Length: 100
Image (cartoon, rainbow, N blue to C red; front, side, top):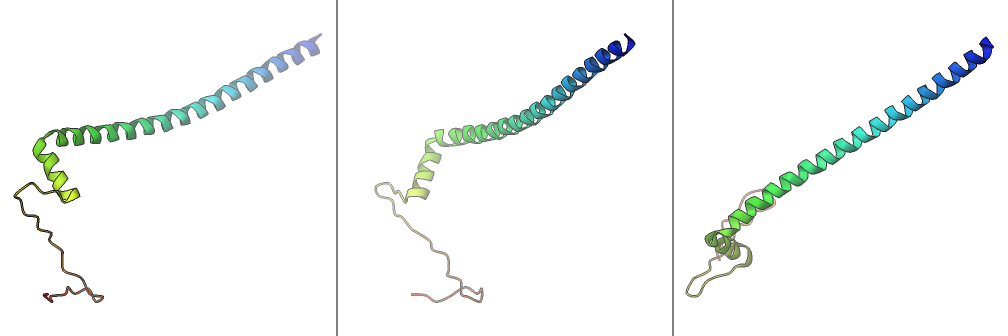
């Protein structure tokens, strides 16, 4: 009878150990997933803050007009548009000083 008790207790301990091992494995997996989601959330919060900053910037009509002019070469009526081209570099790294 003692042998049966020992086998039953051993079986119960083995099942409990197996269950605990699975729970620990699941906990590790869940912890890794939480860390990944936290990183994603932080990146999205940063992107959101940048977008809100851009929204605030573009809500000012002067800034909107400035960006329109710089990105699309827009000019208002009666306004002159001057495009400044930097001097062209030579293969030796010196800048060309020739004028046309």
